Image (cartoon, rainbow, N blue to C red; front, side):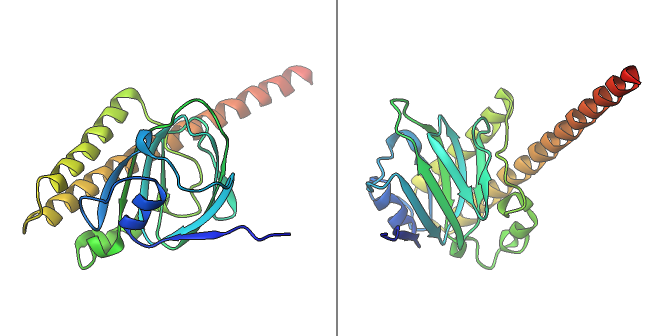
Length: 208
């Protein structure tokens, strides 16, 4: 029985190479357009470890994503978050539907010795304990897309002494919005669970 290859993605350049994309415009951060991705692999099931932060905003994902020991609920949700040095497995399903959306990837060195480096671990959705994708309303989606495109525009405009600080500030805004949207999602889930329990109790009372 042959062993499946474990890929490693240590740099933004390696991410672009495995995705069939041109060389990145910035060595430590990139906004990848999923509609342009052509993975340079033949396997239907791949595993990788990346030394990058991933913030994926994807539609029409064909396949299942496993992060840690559980399956990431990405059937209807739009966003997922993966921290560096984590094992990820993807089972790819072939489809005529071309995925769309964006992946914001950045190297830990990009935020080294900044306020974000100290606080990014506080965002629990980067960990294994949150294994459901972030659902977004149309307005929330437009807010995050605008921020993503703003980050892209900044590093495409040329790198100077202000570029890093401006992009890090924009990433912090994205993360804070995502924290708000996740809290809203969990509250909605909790209410939904309570409603199911209430209906169950009402049914039992009628039966007895």
